[in-house]
Image (tube, rainbow, N blue to C red):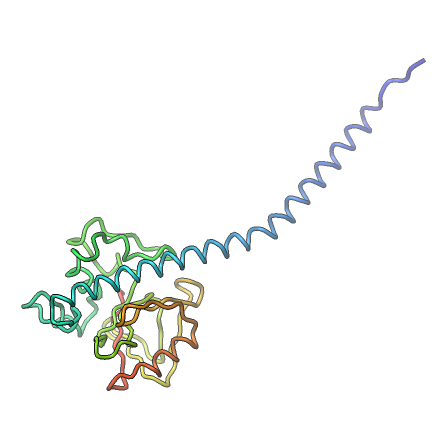
Length: 218
């Protein structure tokens, strides 16, 4: 006489198998999620570098029509932004380069929570992820031209302008790129910089003053 199958045993095995599967998935998730997050941050930083390269090209194209001077060096009477170099008007140099930039979208880093302006006439600091180096000049190619806005130093910004002195502290905050950042130079190059890299860039700028003025889009 054939005995009936023990359904309790089958149910018990299925439940145990389910627990094992869930445990395996949890372990895989714990291993994969940090790697995925790291890959996402890396992709965002690469896209940010590309944005800064396009912005750097726009600066150089614009300067080609202004005797090799950037907007910050040219009076508003001639289409520049020199008269705004004492306040928090970071968006203005980008705004006057609207033809060279083509779209405001490249002014927002993918790692930033800010949103791009719909058009350049509506551009404000809140639509910009990047600082502008007010003392950038073709004469000193290793000066900061632009870069991620999460830059800090020994002193708090005054009216949106951060003052950095070579040899003193300079660092990236955690606002973007997890305490790292990217910077564009007056020669058109862009570099991914650590905190020590920022300080070294300040020391090796070759500038004729010991002060860098950085306009932050606050």
